[in-house]
Image 1 (cartoon, rainbow over the protein chains, first blue to last red):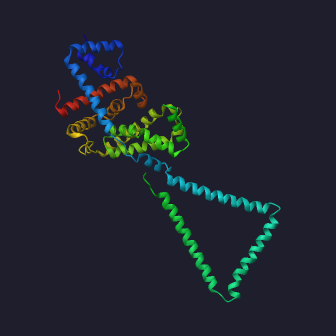
Image 2 (image 1 turned 30 degrees about the horizontal axis):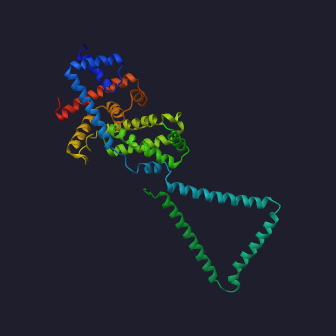
Image 3 (image 1 turned 90 degrees about the horizontal axis):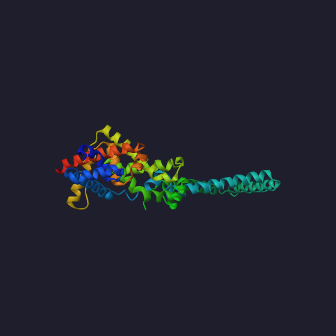
Length: 169
Length: 177
């Protein structure tokens, strides 16, 4: 029979079923007659069970998927704000394409006529307050412009808040 | 791995948030337990888990074989956790600081858990890692060798020494023979 010193280094692999048949037979033959090594095997097995039981009680935080998505910039808010940006840039591209088409195509002369027509209307609108001595219209227009700028600024901030907001599901 | 899991990885590679969310849900316990076993600290384990997933998804394009995803993820989690252990060692933090937190499951279970945590904390990070991969997750020797990138013979001897030292520390904690 092999000594305890010979068998002990194999006990861990024996527990895991990782020994070749010859080594396993050797260990089993030793364990049948050596109470000390048998106690050690039982204790090692109990340690493994205790560790496995303890591991099962360990749970990651429930919000881990959302944390990872946020860190990767893939949360719903991020995706929505990115989609909004895509729509904006797509609209911009379509607008630019339309302008270029209007200038380069034969129909550009029609666009030029419409432009001059619109310009004339705008000039007339600007000249109107002075012609009827109603400068208050200018003040009203300036006020509208200020309100427009303020509303656009707040809209931009609101979009920024939406993007940085963290919503836990 | 099943076909559905491979499909999830393929979609995650293209940045599909739903696929990423599902993968995190499927593997978060595995990664968190690995990190906790090595780090012995809940807050650090959470950070390591999050970092492991972020690193994995950012470099998913470099994963050649989708079937190896679990092993690859485990390798990332282990590497991050061991790096954090080294950083912690530099700060000389007490590894047993969280052991006296609230523990569910009665006084005996709590006492056993405290003993286990204390004994595990006394092992070297390398020994803790093999114990965690084997006892927590039941990985086979060849899988552990792949995760740690070491020969199977080294896994076998490292696991033997880790278990014997753990037993020695537990005997000291519990007064066993």
